[in-house]
Every structure is written in C-alpha cells, then in structure tokens.
Length: 379
Image (cartoon, rainbow, N blue to C red; front, side, top):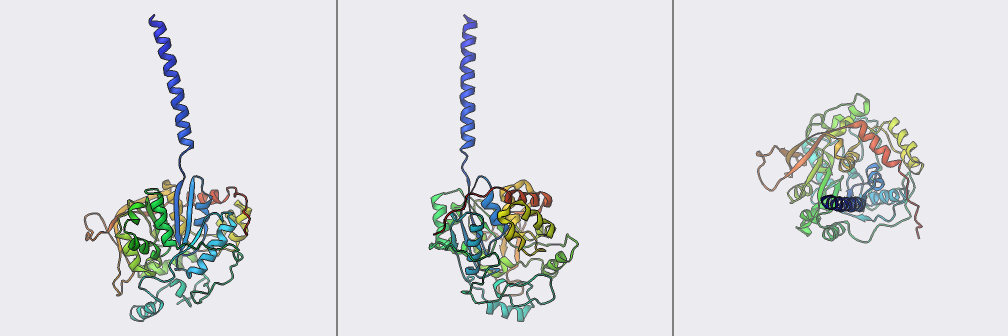
C-alpha cells in the first residue's frame, strides 16, 4: 500500500514540476519589452542600437536643439528611422531654444570669461585649428540637405514634451528616458507635470564631466582633450541649457544613471570601427561610410550601458547638479559624495566612470548586424 502511495505521490510531483516548467517557459517567453523614449539633439549610432536591440520597444524619438537646431535634428531622425525600416517609431519635435540661455548671452559670457570650444547650433568657427569639420551655421528654421538623403516621412504632430508625459502615465514605472542632448524637453515636462519624473522607470543620460583625461594617443583624442584641460567640469549638453539640467536633477526620479564625458575618452570612432560597422549590415553601410571618424562614442555609451550594464567597469554614486549662476562656472557640473551634498533636492546618481571598450564596440557591431524588418510603404 505504501508503494502505491509513493507511486501516486511521485506521479503527482512529476506532473506539478512539468506544469511549473511549462509555466516558467511561457513566462520567460512573455517577458515584456523594455520601453524607452530617446531625447537627443540629432540622430546617430545610439538610436540605431536601440532600434535594433531585441526586447526593446522604442516608444518615440524626441529631438531638441543642441548640436544642431531642432528642425535639422528632426530631419536627421526621420531619415535615420527610414534607413532602419522603423518608420513606425514616431519622431517628435521638442524645444527649439533653451529655457534662459541664448546665443547672445553666450557671446556675452565669452567676452567676459573666454571662448568656448563647442557651442553647437551657435558655432561659427573653431578657435584653433582642428581636424573635425563644422556643420553649417544657419537660422533655426533652416534645414540643410542631408548627406544621407532627405527624409520623405514627417514628424508627429504631437509635442515631444506632451508625448513623454502621456507615455509615462500610460506605462507608469515602465518607461526609461535616455537623454543624450540638452535637457530642455525633460525640464519642460517636469514643470508641466510634477509627477513626470516619478512616473518614469529611470533616467539614463549622457552629459556633464568630472575630470576627463586623454586616454588614446592619436591626434583626434588630443584635440578633444583640449576642451577639458582648463575647464574639466564644463560639457556642452549641460552648458547649452544649465537651468534645464538643474531642474531635471532635482526631480524625484526613481533611478538616474549618468554617463559623463569621462568614459568616452577611451573610445573613438576610428576608420577601422567604421569599416566594421559598414560591413555589418548593407542597410546601414552607405550612411555609416559618410560618418566622420575621430569622434568619441558619447551617446553610444549611454545606449550600450542601458542595454547591457555589464559593460560598466567602474562607477560610483554621487549627488549631481549644474551651476546655473551666470558667472565663470555657468553650466559646470557639480557633484558631491553622499553626505556632502547641500540637500537642495539633488538626486543620487550612478555615475559611469569607465567601460569595457572592446565589448562596447562589439556590442554596436552586433546590434547593427541584426536583420532589419521589412521596409514599410510611405504614402
């Protein structure tokens, strides 16, 4: 009788384990996609990485003025999603101007405190010779022809700011914001809806600098190192709209991951990397071949460490803010170790200090090599 009971018990346990195993498999297969909104001042490899990544739902690509004016950045983003066969992802127009900063204020600041290395959409010429070319200086409403071809699709009619607010309410606690340009859009969203930051899952951003040092020995690395030699805390994304960055860093995010300039000095878009990327996928090859070498992988690090945090080799927790006083340190990054912060609502951030560069490069190559979805008809 005991043997019969043992047999029945064994059969029951086997059935339970089998059912639970099937349930676990179904659960794993049904794992929801990670939702993300990208807010940038242009379009590049970082956006393609996210569009190509498995298990990622790019809800939208917002564009703000910074390196280029918003409308030129919108055109770049529209063409970028066309090349990736992802015209299902809306491109949204963000802020044209910073909250308070302006070209004239920047000219006045330079007259008082010295020349800036990079001014983005306000840039007319380099102060000293450099191998990097300049984008054309033009008015905010001018959109130059793009080297990779002009887009045929149109941007969404919805404001980028209202779109982001709507999506964090639609998916509370699920939406990551990856910001790789000035933070004007995020500051406006937070001011319009004070629940915005708290409803998001997290903020991952590229911006700011602690004390970047030249790592690579080539000429391009030396030229980029000039920007931080005498002003190690000054970085363009913060400097273009300091007030916006300060608003964002005082908002109640659940989690913030910071990618300052510092880890990027070990990276570079070399001709060899461009060859690898062009060979990875013929769909991207023409656009990749047009990219100028020599630039660090700034935004790409932010996208990559969100996709794979194991790429981070060193990080630390710091409280962060931005100097918004119109003086010599206007736009500089401020940071404190826990316990030293002034406690004026600054938020603790995970600050990335270094990354595994070979694995980072391979990550980009692997993502771009993935097969594109079928191209959609554009009417």
